[in-house]
Amino acid sequence: MEASPRSLHMRYPPWATQRCPRRSCGPPAFLTAHAYDAPSRWRNREGAAPSLGRLWVRDPLRPVGGRTDPLSCPRVAPLNVSPRVSPPREAEGFSPCQAPTLQTKVFQYRLWDVNQKSLYLRDDQLLAGHLQGANAALEEKVFWVPNRAFEPTRLPVILGIRNGTRCLASPPKNSTTPALQLQAVDIRELPHTGEASAAFTFFRSYKDGLWRFESAANPGWFLCTSARGHQPLALSRSHDATHLLDFYFQLC
Image (spheres, rainbow, N blue to C red):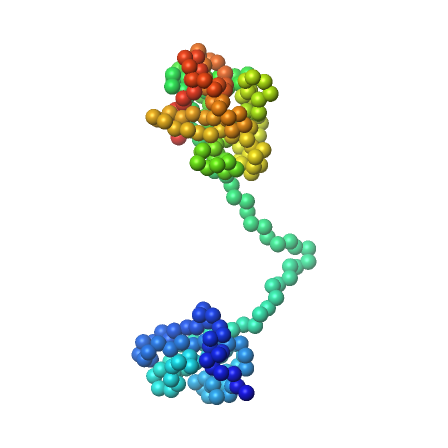
């Protein structure tokens, strides 16, 4: 017993249909591709029964013959239905190609405090002081990357110098005041370490054109400079005459 064209048509999803592109063929006719042996009464334009893989089944809701027969449209090409094939096996001695790792974009900024003191490196410490004349070339540019391991609304960043090869770190405090140090790590790799990057992470906050940087490992402690010149960059939780917490932070 031959299968009903209606049941065959309704069995397949809409993407298996194609609208006749020639408007002169009358009302739109839909063609459906099926991978089975067609009954002999469904034949192509040359009179031959369709073979497996090249089969048009007419829409049972449209009449056959005349200008609404989809098989009579010379501009409609049959759909190619290929049998299911297994994925190719990898050649012996070869492994599947791995997608390239996305590179973390590093930004280069200038960082200086409200008293116009710039950062420079001396004896493996970042100091803040007024650099004039030839000493202006000593200013350290700050390289930073966002750290998506933490809440994005807090603007978490990792800060470093020397093209991001030395990063600011503030490990969880073991004493009254947490320490601030430079560590030789790659700033591009730290965002991929998750919660382990907390010691290198600072949350930014902005107000009236100035930025503050709060340590993620030591909540409530902020980057600060001393009111006196040429003193180390440090952490403080109080904003007073001797500790400056506000910075200018701009793209170079």
